[in-house]
Length: 176
Image (cartoon, rainbow, N blue to C red; front, side, top):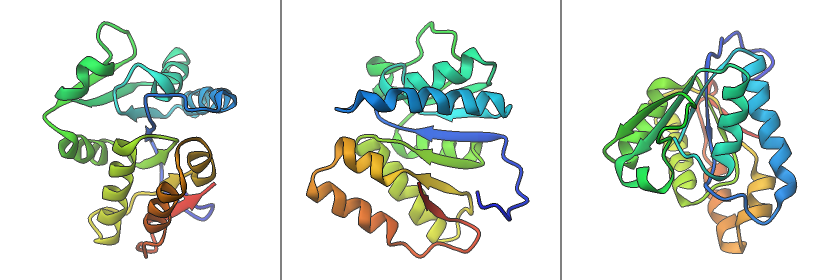
């Protein structure tokens, strides 16, 4: 999402983990992100969870009027699905790969917050698809927060690999 871009974004996919991590001070930032998405009249696409960071962003966006689409694999549904919660539409898919594909189909850009291995898998997949010119959608990654909350030294090396990709000029990994 560069300043010179004329792209119109309507659907933003936010990906994060189920847990708050060690640093609860980031909670307000995720609530602010959800509010900002709603204030800009954007629609939120997310992993469908109703716990942790996913819940904070989705509830903040939903309460302020954003349309929501939670995409969750059938196997994860018992762990944190929308159930009867009135936070938008839910799409249950067969597996993680279908989830990533559906997120790509429904979103115009991606924001990655601190997460788990599923978040990392999605980042690596989307970044590699961008590298292969399968899509040219922006990917925003807050590495400093992710490393601070979830990674040990080995985990940090994985993120470095993800960031060392040479993406097409219209698709960028932006480090906040």
